Image: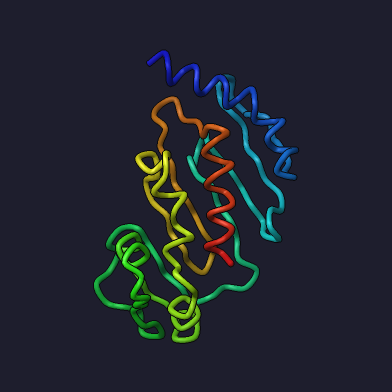
Length: 169
């Protein structure tokens, strides 16, 4: 649609400035018509925003915590060294349909004050574009779909990148 094309064009035009506003590096796209990639350190974590190929926002963990949170059903029982995470926070428990972690990580999540509050940006104006959010030992990955050709609007990035960083913490 024309609106989508315009959105992508605007996103591509604003990406270099957005990169410097967020303290990230902008890598121009390899193919004409693509948006490019943002990478670098954000909130103390390595970040990669790839609207073209991965359609995602990724934040890496320094260590590799034993955790597996997913917005979709992945497996019915926890891996041998993990337990099911129960927070008692309806938003959190509903959002992450798969919730496994080592006992210490599970306790940290359950002890957090209203962990569901960290998810508010994902229920906001971009909620229908959020395909999935996963938290694994690699880090936090937010997959987005703003249609084809792919792009991530500036507003979505400004809301969802800090939200991903909060989840990572």
